[in-house]
Length: 119
Image (cartoon, rainbow, N blue to C red; front, top):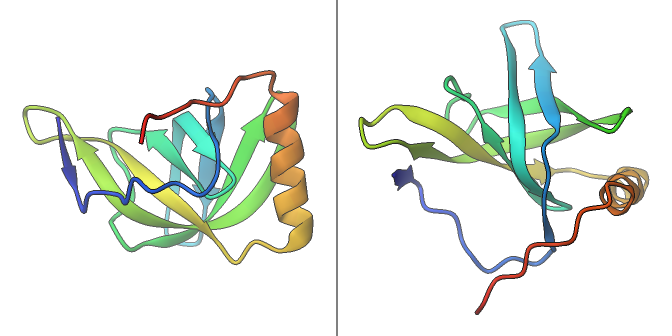
């Protein structure tokens, strides 16, 4: 597995292992995938056709019947041994206080324990 534009691993928010739907529906395309993990700062989305690095998209996150729209930038791609894209890391941007509170509540209500990384 290889990664394009390796993400900075100095995380400022807790990451949760979580399977949730994520999609975008814009004038130019429809794209969807499933999360592997999520935090208040961003999400990794498993997808065989991720958006391009640098794309800024409105995305809908759906967790256990609750959903919200956020804006996110594709920061990096994950590739398999054959060089095919298998997902992307997306950073949430321009979240207001209400969105941050809503996302935090959704994560807490998911029942998942945060992932812990050794420094």
